[in-house]
Image 1 (cartoon, one colour):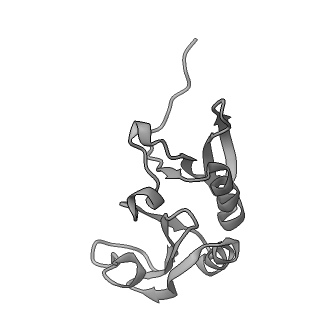
Image 2 (cartoon, rainbow, N blue to C red):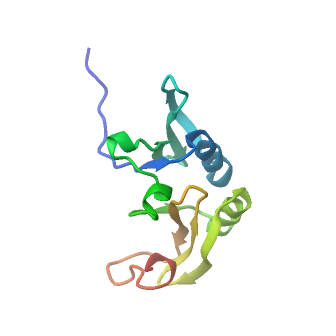
Image 3 (cartoon, rainbow, N blue to C red):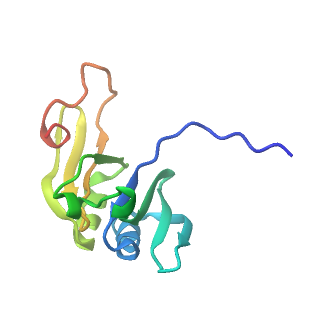
Length: 146
């Protein structure tokens, strides 16, 4: 029996404190759909979520495996960019669900984008391009730059 072909992909894995709460936040804030879920005997989840086909993973931090949440390290080393048709609506929904605004949604350098931090310390840029991109129109300011 041949396995189906698997396309190349990269999916971030977010380590958090309170995995079950985080999964519910991402569902509420971004309309995420849970496409995979398991739990260890203690009830700590590992979940693969999808937002419009863009997938990411969420689980409780596990310091014994060197997987730390932003809360444990005092910040995060990765920002996520969620590209959506209506960044204003998604941004507002995330704020209503408990995220905090870092930069409001605005236009600049060919993007409409805003930046927020979720309740678990992960930074998200919510936006969309406003014109076709080329190497000369990639963002150099605003939310995508700092």
